[in-house]
Length: 493
Image (cartoon, one colour):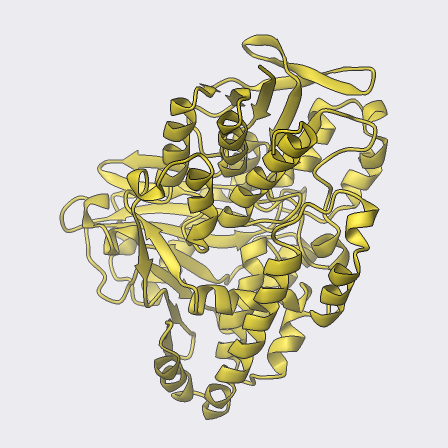
């Protein structure tokens, strides 16, 4: 029986482990944190339950595929439910727009401040659908392992059709004029850790993905997804060790032969790293074994944005909040100038709130609200000191929410702050970046680090830094794609 080692028990690593185990591999997973899930961890304080990580779930078929290829039914492990309206958007001018699959209702809400933008919504959503279809056919289901795969005529044709040199913001300007609409749809660039003023227009596809295909919640919180993957993996015989950090790869004659972890050395026929490509190359692989990923090349990549998280437990109900909520500032562009230009935390950022207790009241004590509050933040640098700013910055965000109508939130009984430096320490995220590298250019969007390293055999990457990209469903898909490529080369599929 062939052996596989997976470094990291995030969604991509667990997805890969399950697929390999289904096809007869003996799989061992090492996770440095005390629970599976990678960036997606469940925490509890004084009866308030939070997911410290991704909370907006799309493309349920990507998760269903993990169970189906293992001969199981997802509904026996996970309970997903559709959320519609999906997100409530609060604008600085007082207008509110609830994102929904009901397009006529969407147009009515937008028309309250911009009849012109409302009249353009159908045309924009039609282009969004076309962009998603191109991405789904040509980019989301392939690993682009070599130049031959990147130069396929159909791929080049698709790349030209999606106008890679047009920014998301420029695409939005073709349809919309009002700052509210531009911010609401421009925010989709942050789903891949980027700026709408720099990232390619392809990310307009998220409007179709969320608005038409839907946003989903998970009973018990989104951390139930890695928990379900763990359960399935263990049923298939996968060994999972948590609190077990891998120190280095064991390399001989240009091949990865296994790993050295806190549990000792272990050999394997294939090793898969579910983590930040840049951190893994820098920390686990000597430079001589990664000539295609030199220290200077690592430094040349622009990291994605990070996030400052506040976990707020307050003994109040807020009737104005849905499951997902976004509070926009008056001047949206300044936020990205601060993050990617000055590398400082924005003084007036967009604030996202996940109130999962809206859908599941048991997530908070009776009469209380569990609020996951996220503000976009810069990746770690000498320009901003989170040790000094943690408390001050967190308090300033909470006060800002009080001024936006969340009365009493400053008196919350639970206040916990989580910084980009905490994320870097816990997960190995390069410079605390949530998505690895940004998509602030066509090169970093369409030519991401590969799933393999030249000159280093029997070694693979899965996760958001590599192909096919970031986001919970896409990362999950990457694990399946890499496993299937390994199995194909092994003659098992």
